[in-house]
Length: 336
Image (tube, rainbow, N blue to C red; front, top):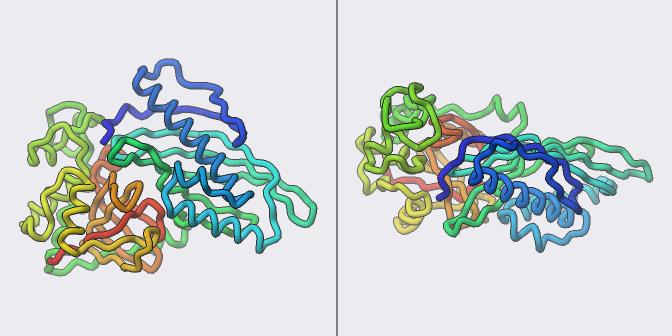
C-alpha cells in the first residue's frame, strides 16, 4: 500500500494521441512530483487506450491500464454509439484536478469530443471523475470512470445520476448486530486523521494526512493506512466476534479471509449476481485478487449502495457506489 503524499493540483492539456504535460506546480516535493508525473502518464495512456477501444474496437491496451469492468463498459459504449448512428472524429482532454491519497487517487478531467451524425460534426464536453488504485505489487490501474454522454445518453457503469443520489438507500436500524455495526460507524462520520500522534480522540483537531488515528492506536499500528483498521474497530466496539468479522489491517488479507470462510460474493463487474445487504463489508480494488479499500454497507437501493469507510479523503465518510461500479470487487456477508 502506498503512503499518501499531500494533495496537489495539476493542470494538463492533451490530445489523446499525443499526451504532453504543460504545467506542474513548481513547489511540489520531489516524491510528490514523481507521483503526479506517474498519474499523468497513466491518465494519458488510459484516455488514449479508451479512445482506441471505443472507436476501433481494440481494447488490448485498455486491459493493461483499467479494470475489466471498465473494459466491458466501453464495449457497451461503442455499441451504443453504433446503434445511435454516431461516430467520434476527434478528442482531447484537460486534467483539472489530481488528489492523491494512500488508498486511491482521484482525477477530474474534461474531455472535448467531436461527434459526427448524418455528416454533421459537433463538439461536446464530457466531465470525467477517475479513481485510480494500486494492486499488491504497486501497479496502478484506473478502477472507475464516472461520466455521462449527452449525445447518446450513455452513462458509465460507475456514474450516479442526481435522481439516484436522492434514492441512496437508508438503513433501518433494528436490534441486530448488522444495524448496531452501522450505528457505531455512523457515529464516527466526520473523524479526520491526524498529522501527528496527538489529539487522536478529537474529531477535527490536529487534522492532517499522516495516518495517525485513534483506530490505529487501538490496533497497534500508528501511523498506518486505516480503512481496514476502521472496519475492525467498529466490529470490536460492537462486540462482534472475530469469527464473524476478522480483525484485519490489510484489505486484500481481509477479503481473502472472508473468501476462505465462504461468505464472499463478487460484484456484478466481476461476474457476480449478489445483492448486498446493510451490514455487509465492501471491497474495492484492481482485480478479483487485490483490494485497496474497504468499508461498511449502510444502505441499499435498487441501483446503488451507501457506505461508510475510514481513510476516505483522509476521514471517516459516508459515500455511495453504483451497484455496477467497476471499482467494486465484491462483498463479504458475515455470518452474524
